[in-house]
Image 1 (cartoon, rainbow, N blue to C red):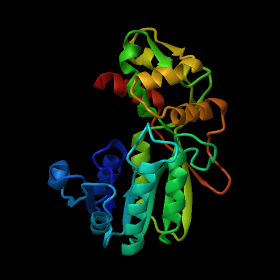
Image 2 (image 1 turned 120 degrees about the vertical axis):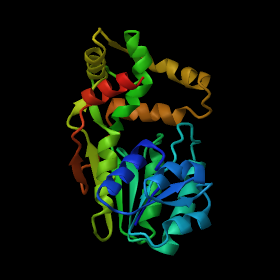
Image 3 (image 1 turned 135 degrees about the vertical axis):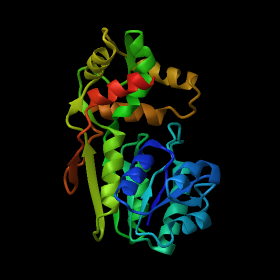
Length: 287
């Protein structure tokens, strides 16, 4: 039996589906019975955790399983102290320390090892706390999600989409959620001792210009990426409702300047098979 958090999201759903296909038992960790109904119909056991900070509910969800897949609910507007992350991590790791499942796989991120302030610091916080539980743990450090390009579909249909990743010809590691979920399921079925750091990238690096070319091929018309001037980011993000935009800004700086990248030393490397072009084709069909 494997407990899967975030099962109603993209990566968790793929991890769970992969395990079910392998005829492994899955416990779906959901906020309500209603959200778990579809997974129950597929044969999953349901564990309701209405609040990610509810240690008691998490203990019940994690108790007696071979492995747990962990996700930190995304917050793109976290305060500088990552207060929400720290509360959730404390609840989850206390629960894990008490019930001691066989292993844990955390969906972490490229750049988790970076100490300079940026939005991805949450991952370093979670990794450090999980290491303290004493259970075998794997930190799955995924590259920039290819599916983040879903934000650009509507603009790409009009011929131009804004890019905060720049210069426009600078390529970075990207990976599809399909590969992330698949690898997460594979890791849950492996056995090891201690800690593992797995860095997962796609078949090759891609730039905003590559994204534009991929959209153009999928849509059958020219598409251009347009760099958003950095000096407008703060005002733009605040206009979108953000209260703490600096973490996001510094994260983008990290990708653009190259100091957010894979650690390499002391880590395992895996490569996904899904191409960015295939993801972009699928996104244009969906929306």
